[in-house]
Length: 137
Image 1 (cartoon, rainbow, N blue to C red):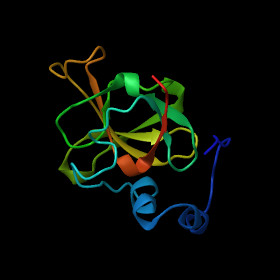
Image 2 (tube, rainbow, N blue to C red; image 1 turned 90 degrees about the vertical axis):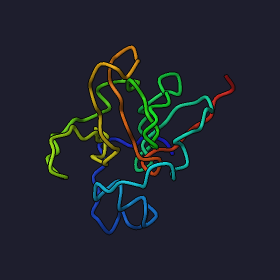
Image 3 (spheres, rainbow, N blue to C red; image 1 turned 45 degrees about the vertical axis):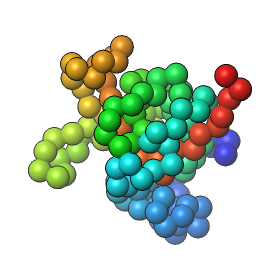
Image 4 (cartoon, helix red, strand yellow; image 1 turned 120 degrees about the vertical axis):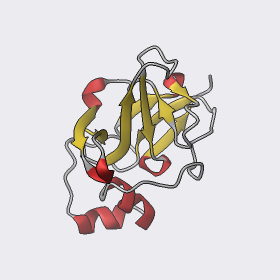
């Protein structure tokens, strides 16, 4: 799906565009169960985009196995495509990751040594929030 500029739709319009499961995750900040999503263990080369609006978000070059059950990346392709929001749900403080273009919930980012990544970051995302465009690499 090509990227759309500053996408803002009503809940009804989102429901018409997305599956029930994708709507629950992208628009209501839900979370898919670990080890169940389409991309948690894929090793295919390509670009991961927001399922809601098509904005390119992550490259397979930054994807790694964080052993958490969700697709994990250590950096977005362009930090301006991501919006960070403090999330105090679940009795803890976390950093929610949203698509900057359409405000869809993608997952969370965690910082800390021991992730064995160049950035010491782990973006744990929902497969249903992403679309993979495969490359020939």
